[in-house]
Amino acid sequence: MEFLFHILEGIFFIPFLIWIIYFLVFSIGYRIPRNQSFKNTAFQHRFLVIFPAYKEDAVIVESIRSFLKQDYPSYLYEVVVVADSMQDNTNATLRHLGVTVLIPKYEHRSKAAALNLAISATQDKQFDAVVILDADNLVYPDFLHQVNRSFASGCKAIQAHRIAKNANTDTAYLDGISEEINNSIFRKGHVNLGLPAALTGSGMLFEINWFKQVMPKISSMGEDKELEYHLLLDGIFTTYLEEVYVLDEKVQNRKDLSNQRKRWIAAQIDTFLLTFKSIGTIFRTRNWPMLDKLVQWSIPPRIILLGFVPLWIFVLYILAPILIFKWLLLYLLFLIALCLAVPNRFYNKRTLISFLKLPFIFMAILRSFMGIKSGRSTFVHTPHGEKKEDYSN
Image 1 (spheres, rainbow, N blue to C red):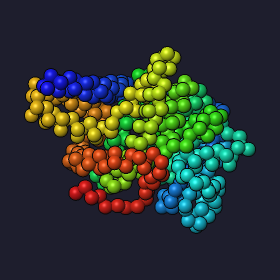
Image 2: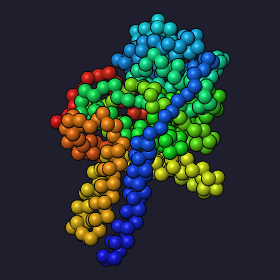
Image 3: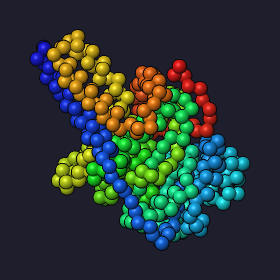
Image 4: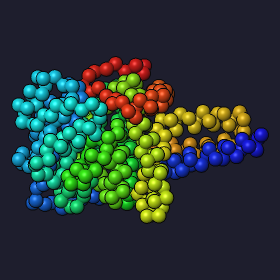
């Protein structure tokens, strides 16, 4: 019986070893100095800018006003807001600002449906690229100028640097740190080591013809994951623009965090299963970026790893103490990887205090797994622009 337990523990150890080494490699990649620059260009592309918005009356007007301050010719970009279930006065204000407002009537609500509606409604207009932003996103006046330079340099898929625009609760602050860890590992770390960056749902740019061909194929709640899948199938490298910021509102309480992660986890599982079916083709065609993405999509949320491994070490301490040393070493490597991935500006007193709330976040993410089934088929809305009490105290 003891021998069987050792065998099972060894099998159990393998995926954790792969996941944590994966984090460590790309965390080190993040710390590699690398200068990324694009030459100035006189050519100015025409952009379709889409803001999918569901019940976003509290934030969408501010976001649009922010975007319209671009130091880029206004006749070279069109802003489209897909205004789902928003108030008439909000839509009137948006139209007054000069943007195109689309009122959807689709049966199955999703961000993919909103994007497809915007593409369909602008079929007769000429654009070079599409920019996707969330209703709560704010950008700086040079946003289009910067992505235009990158696009002119041959980049067909671009992910900007999404950062937190609020840190008013411990949950929001920790969510902002989590976003930056993702940027470090899955974006800058990857690009520094020669692999495409991961998409993050907003602050994205795609060559318009490719986007028009692919978007009708996408209908899931995890449109960014599916877009990544198709980018990798087509061999398109996603560039990460670390210096081009998109300010994104972070969730402010654990309930919203749990609902948001439910959608993310469901999308990740579905895309992993879709990709895994093609594993033979991946090796046959030597599509190593797709293999990298398959490993990435197999990884559970980091907070689950942070909380589960110590519990497992405690179980081993009781049942098989000799086995705990390799797990302790593995956990130490995981902590080193996370420390490397956290940007230096977060090394402060508030971060230390906020980390005391991680057990509560761990429980919130565990609850997310119980709602994965609904997260696959039901649109889960994350409220924005409302001040919320943080119940983590």
